[in-house]
Length: 281
Ligand code: X90
Image (cartoon, rainbow, N blue to C red; front, side, top):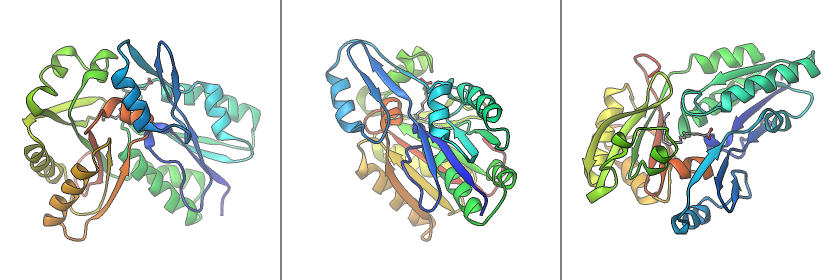
């Protein structure tokens, strides 16, 4: 087997993958009084509770090149998949780290992939990479395989407050979301930014609309991953609705780590899934 290490950032909500070396570079959630590092020691629910009490402003920051180099380690070829460059500087700092790493270790290569997404879609890409690494593919073959893997990310959120206060969606877009049970449905678009597709009232309506959207987007019962933020009931309800149409769907439910919890907010669900048709977004 080739000596390939997979390196992600904490927006993938993954802390390990069986059978291959995995490095994770944490993003940070920052308030005036505290910095939360999104690594395995962070309790995302405790963080969310503290942030609900906290009245000041909060923000996030991406790993710097040094953080990436630490996650790369030494002595491997690296496949690095980052959160979307459309909303974060993470991909850019990974590019700097790649240059430095290849300079320091001329015998090794870093293949870098901008997921143009977040959360469970990155996790699907990571699983695909794992499969190809374990099958003995070369670094180039693994990277090509991940790049041609067709997946998408859709979401339902109960609030866009943190997106709006960090300037990552407009205040106008965020308006009404969270009032009287209004949820926003949307997806990661082809530029890796947040596209709003509709606003609906109540969880049932939201989930029914979401399942419809997954179908329209080309989901045909393949792998589907739900990352939820303090909403195991919603995730379960969604997976039941999907199984009504696709009884054999391969569904995996996971919880959001810190960065996704911060932006998806309480009740939010991110859905990454395989598509059989259409373009990347
Ligand atoms: O660099 C930074 O400070 C991090 C900024 C990250 C902003 C995006 C986080 C997305 C988390 C929330 C819902 C899905 C939206 C997907 C749009 C691509 C997940």
